[in-house]
Image (cartoon, rainbow, N blue to C red; front, side, top):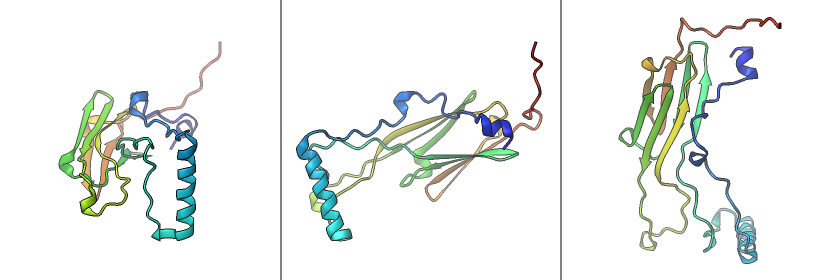
Length: 172
């Protein structure tokens, strides 16, 4: 990575609106809910892995499914890895609209009920969309995608004829 890139990295998420970003988790403010959470923590510490806990009955629902993304800059390309556990190739879509890279998909909800023996579930389901802004030297026309073992890997070559340059600016 160039010195310029380290000082001022590209903002890949500039087109992702604030409504697409996860909301900070709020903690329930009712004293009984706080006490219930403290009791669950104490119970887990006492019994370790044997403890079966349930969320507080009035706790807020969990956030929607939103896959994590890693972006690596290499001299000749960018590598974007999207973590999508539980999804298959057919559940995903990758589209390029100008400099906007749209990664979307759907994780179908599995119905859980007491007859199945479920005590607790933290899995998340639903539709998701991640919107990345490609840098000027990214060659979107040569972008390739591969899916393996719950990871979507996008390989974005960099333009050879548009290298980033550094120059001094005269101060007048």
